[in-house]
Image (cartoon, rainbow, N blue to C red):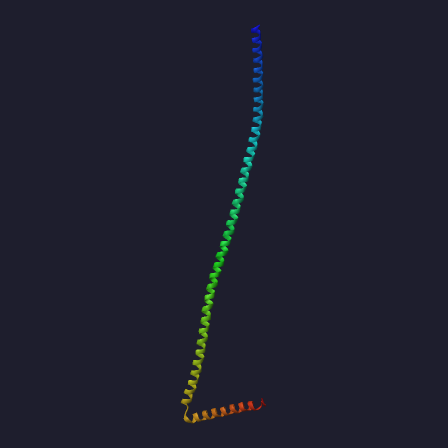
Length: 168
């Protein structure tokens, strides 16, 4: 009987050990399947996130590239405007300098015209004196007499103009 008991216990323990091992194996296999599904889901989501991240990076790079291009274009345009302004400033300075030269030339021209007029007056006086000196003494007396007559007439006209005025 002891052998029967031993065999019964042995079978009992073996059955329970086999049941435990079988249940653990089934449980582990179920956990493995669930884990695989979860891992596949996460891998799929991770792949989607990577694709979305790449798309966002590409969009951001494209946007930044366009922004940089537009800023470079703006800088280029502003540089051109600045160069145009500098050119106009240079042209203005040249024109201003030319105007100063023209003003100087005009004042010098006015001075020379005044000098020319003065010389012409002196030449005219000298020509009259030369003509007077070339006259004969009789002709000189006639000229002197007519000049004296003109001086007298001018002084009488001036006196008449002062007599009409009344009192002050």
